[in-house]
Image (tube, rainbow, N blue to C red; front, side, top):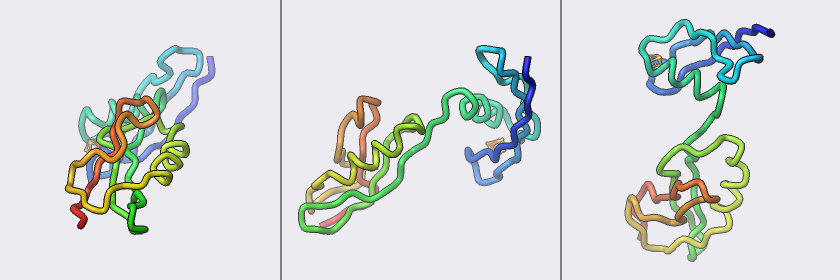
Length: 122
Ligand code: SF4
């Protein structure tokens, strides 16, 4: 049994609670306890962050005319896929005319997440 403590900043809301997570690496779910959360979502965030961290990717995609359009994933994807996801987005040639919510790249890397435009363009 190897008990460790880890400090995290909860990013679920602007309050940014500092969470202290106690972990036991011998357990399948290593999270033993979480302290410092202002609400239950902090517990959920700490558990996910310590077992299967995910992130929403926010970036820009190249457009056909050589410009860019702001975009993001419409759901969080595994953190370990962010680098490959950026490569896929950078390889896009998005239309010059897009509307907020348009899907620029469906099912990013088989995650089920879509890359969607976050601004109107053109
Ligand atoms: S623990 Fe709750 S109150 Fe604190 S930052 Fe996370 S979501 Fe916000």
